[in-house]
Length: 329
Ligand code: AVI
Image (cartoon, rainbow, N blue to C red):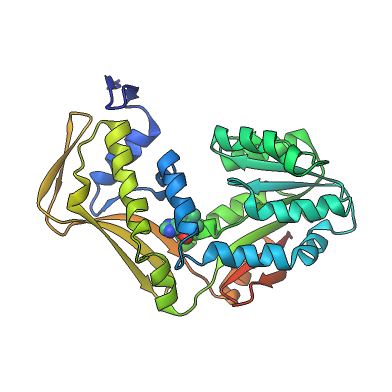
């Protein structure tokens, strides 16, 4: 057992058995180097993502907000079915800004439902458990803190009502296509026939529009990516010189893959945990994130390939984004 406990820069004990540490070492010692974008979201990363959602070029949030604010009634009708009681589960609920519009409409319509936000962040869940009953009086809410599929299992053990699972924001795009398919298949395995999924997907569009969203002029996406190196410095006792890395984004209109990289500007060594010594050649890259874009047809194919039947699509006014409703077949 090689587990070590040393003190990180922040003063917290660093356990080398920690999954974050292991994933970072694995990614930075691989060829080519990579980091997992799920680690972007520490407190600073959450704030930078908020800034990103407010910047001019980053369109996906506004598009999905357009759907949730202008087609709330139709969305609610589609998921309410015959009016039977149901559980409305949201994977990665965050601050539930978009879903709140739908929740409010469902409450106004006296729909018989419980909202079960699932999030890996304990802060998010306690925030929602406390604030939503105030902002949305009458809501029945049970927040679940943990990994998506573990919490879906828990949700099923708590209630056997019909389930509607929301996965918004094109979070599915942060997985390569094959992994996204595996994710949908696993989601299906936690559902019963007739249950539903409401999935937000960013669509292929003018490549310049996509690229600009991941390469904003104000440099927020760059900061968002560099923040992961800062997080590694803080939490894993590393010495990345942030100024010696630049951000690079690409979009391939054929495959729909938008990818982000950090590029080492010089030949340099980075120490991690006082022990791993990672060498970067000048111009070497770290692969940071994929934000996959789909065609409408690909989304429908994804439904049928993973055990769902496509029910309906909601488009924003520009047709840049869809919220797809699938029924478990
Ligand atoms: C959270 N996710 C859907 C965002 C996206 O568009 O891929 C994360 C993001 N990365 C850079 N900008 C935004």
